[in-house]
Image 1 (cartoon, rainbow, N blue to C red):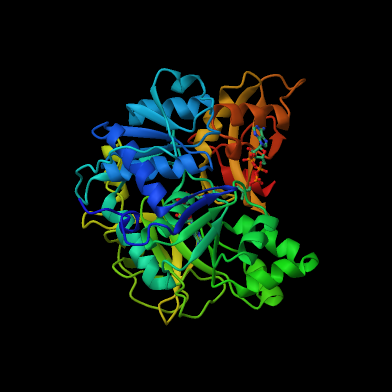
Image 2 (image 1 turned 135 degrees about the vertical axis):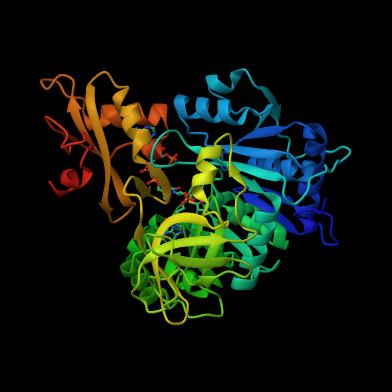
Length: 481
Ligand code: MCA
Ligand code: AMP
């Protein structure tokens, strides 16, 4: 089994690998701690990782990958219902967590290993093929609970190596990020990416413009963020010349997980002299396209296909679109070594996600410019919301709302939000119109059951949901009101 992280055992193990606040590990230290943990979890089936933004999460995931065991990162803010579903579905044999972290009831019955980032002891590398699962990452769909995307080892190595080519990403780079570690963006790109290159990562614990400025001023060369983070940077720039100066000096500013509005692109470029570049990916596909470091950073596009990734646009009937005219809209389909293998325990959903000849249907709609640049113009499913860079299915929130005693009927839509991209709006028919549940009550209810980022930000009380003759809720009629 080839290691995903050659730098763990290379000749320069004194180099810094990870830093979270004032805690850090060199490659040598990371190799020792993750090797010792790998020896303990070898053959464990799947392991859950309590993915707080901390050193322990990175050590736990690296150890799992070294052991050849699949890791299931858990959002530490997941509510009971979401956590219960993920644990039942992925059936991990053990949970890896930082010493002292309190784990909620659904995890209480699971064996626990405290991750010791200073552990020593004999290391053990497991056996796994390139097609074996590396991660199971839960991602929302339009209906029902989140599905576990099984991501093989080859997808991780191929996506990170393709990005190294596109971004001229090397071991000299120092990445700063403040993304959560239970999704692909923050974990695969933000942690495993620098480690595969032999570079280093400084995690902010939580995103702040001050943290970004501090790290870029102290040797960091790259920044990864979701559009909400770049929006907050754009808002701060007019009063913060220091932030503008350090962003201007950065080697690469990368945005992804949702579209970065052109207005924010332009405000950042005007204040810093640098353009943010965008890349486009999905939990199921890892990265598909990117503006290249040596290419033109054109606002509003996600660049060109990454090396090894086939990208096509298709009509509604599945016919490929051959024109590169910047106008003809089609669904993006992708094929390549970067793809997931399956949705865990969901052969039906897996089959539906692929065409008969192996292309993955992304559900994203796009056009292609004459020079091959892809512009995403929308999404097939109106029942998926991207808020703060998180993908959220409306069905899941509707189901949670219906479990509240004050809710008789519920529908959820997304509406534009300058900061979050989209915000979640709940349309509720109260059980008792005299005392309808308020926004705080329903937000807390959803946050407790699912996760805080899935909570509605706006609640409208209505007397009935608009339905068509078939009884289906007409969401477009709701959003227009
Ligand atoms: C607020 N909070 C609550 C409640 N209200 N907690 C419980 N119950 C409530 N009712 C808490 C929140 O948990 C949060 O805590 C804090 O109050 C502020 O909440 P909020 O305003 O929602 O968050 P924010 O600080 O504004 O978050 C903006 C953000 C965040 C930092 C940009 O949305 C974020 O981290 N987004 C990243 C999403 C991401 O990584 N997506 C990648 C998936 P606390 O602050 O302590 O958490 S997409 C992907 O992976 C693909 C492959 C791709 O292409 O990248
Ligand atoms: P997720 O499943 O949470 O990984 O989210 C994947 C989705 O995020 C994609 O299907 C796109 O809709 C969206 N996305 C990711 N990157 C970009 C980007 N740069 N521009 C527009 N949408 C993006």
